[in-house]
Length: 210
Ligand SMILES: Cc1cc2nc3c(=O)[nH]c(=O)nc-3n(C[C@H](O)[C@H](O)[C@H](O)COP(=O)(O)O)c2cc1C
Image 1 (cartoon, rainbow, N blue to C red):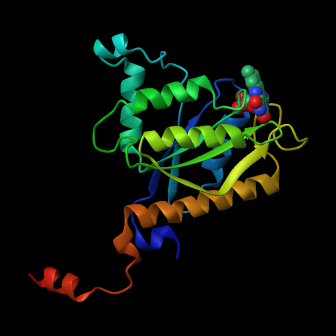
Image 2: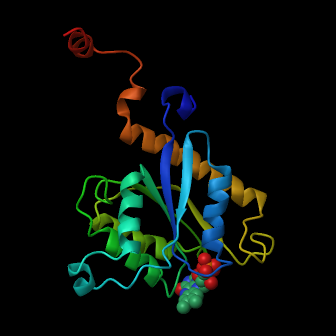
Image 3: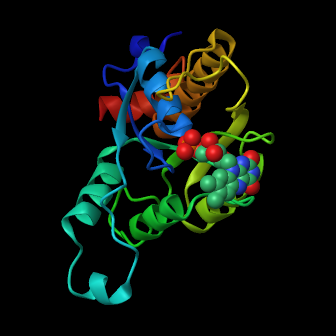
């Protein structure tokens, strides 16, 4: 059953790339995700380039506008997709910094309890090590992460991305599409479990009649 058959609202997904460069493979991965998002999923890409380094003194004076924007984008999303490059076997500093800022939000809808998934494009390991590190961080933020099927792309394989960072390889786009499809269904089960109940139980009927 397609998501839109059981839910009139699309799943609103916030997508954050851990690379700032224009022709980034990871940002390209998120653009491709936005293009091929399955029915019932709507992807918005949030640019983290204006975020300052996390600094408790800056925070104490009040969040800068870019931090306010990040926290509110996370709150307004049903779920988050992170695209991480791999830098020295870890995620990028800028992505960790964005997550550190976002993790300071204690309001309803913050990263705590938020469904999330990780994708990535990088060197030979396809960012697997960076993704593992990010998974640990998202454990502490209390986010609920879907790991499988997984998207770990060897970005330098010829014909995978073009010179502007667009994902052009059809098989890789299909891999991404199936991960997004799983993510849509997985999020729906977490967020709207009652939509999966085919019949009302006696208690539901009694409550509805009350
Ligand atoms: C400082 C630095 C460290 C890197 N370390 C790794 C690494 O440990 N493993 C890896 O697979 N690729 C590594 N790379 C390659 C990047 O993952 C690769 O350039 C990736 O495409 C960057 O993401 P982007 O295209 O989204 O900017 C490194 C690149 C840089 C600049």
